[in-house]
Image (cartoon, rainbow, N blue to C red; front, top):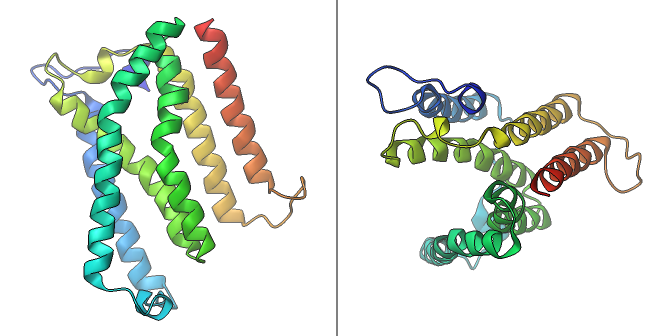
Length: 213
């Protein structure tokens, strides 16, 4: 956030302070998750072979690589298509990137999460989403390293600041939900956590829409 609102740089260093912090924090988080599960996971995960006796390691690896390749190939085309959309419609790149491009790139995560829930792998479904958000922050560090004209976050628009705040708010809502384990469903179909997440996302969308108009 400081890099978005007030550019922060380190003399003689072409990377932003955020980049220098994000990579070790990501490594620390992964290490903590791995250590915690080894110490506190009471019941080992059900072996995949018990659920899918016909599956083989070769079949799983090949299928994984094919799916990953398709996602990467689509990702290479999306930025130029999104930029064309923004220029044609007269929208800002921030608006298109935050709503349309982000939604398109998150569709694989949605499908994976729903598939994981369908087979009963709830922890994998949640870990996919939280882990994706965690890794996306590291992507900023990778982008910063690849950007040749100094710290990346010092060159982007401060219009992203509301999105950052909403993202932090939504992460906090999920954290509270994981800690307090809500059981009530005030809407009959979704919990208050889901309602709060939808409301926060809708608020961010409205901010972007009115900001782009």
